[in-house]
Length: 337
Image 1: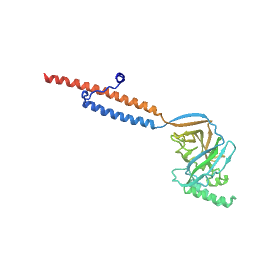
Image 2: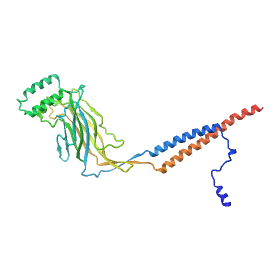
Image 3: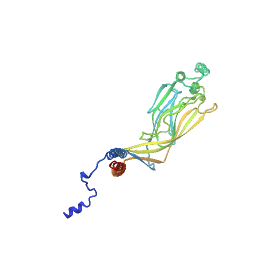
Image 4: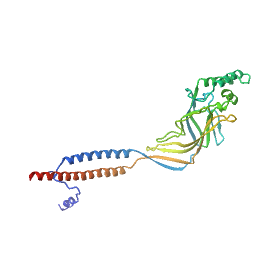
């Protein structure tokens, strides 16, 4: 018996007889409000626990011998697909012209809203030039090409280019232009470099698969030329990235930053307009890891907020009871007198 009494003396939560308890309406109101607050805080803490967060780490990039995937999806409203080519060159000296592996072109009819193009007098000159094609020594294939492209320009044809370029993991550039054409054929089609309109819309440009939270700065970019022509250059800094999901799955990809430069074309320039993407790789790789808070951390926060709410509602109930008791007792005494 002595041992049981000693154990009972350690009870920090002594019970009170039911007939000694007094229940009030104010206590019920405070209890309901307290339960609502505790339920809200519980679901908030549960959501906070189940939500993952990301941790960023940096290290030296040790990858070798891998290729760099470049996903492109662009529209050129004023260049037909027959003249548009995708070329790539890198620091190792590899130069590829008019790439067609994993690259597709779709003809798009674009409404000409002030896009630069041939004027009426230029069209007349083009018509006169058609009669002189044979005299200038163009073969039948070149003549058909020139006539086809001129007709496409007159019909307002544009071109959508999309696909994937697999290049070496070294600095280089790829560009979209009319460089695949013979210079004399291009001269006959456009009447000069100043009439080549490289207005473009970049629907998507990325260097690998997308992960949650990734923002590609060039997506949705629109560049329109009015009464001028020139070359666009996008200088891109690629940062190798690994995204590690909570499931331990690893997604190798890349993110990038970009700056832009436009060089207007003049009549005496020797180059033809183009859209260049000049890229370089950072020697630092970024690892992004998804992590979840520990269950012990969840329990600690849950006990803190629920216990704090319970204690606060208890204090509020005590204050309200004393306030109401203080307001009602004087009235009762006045009635008895």
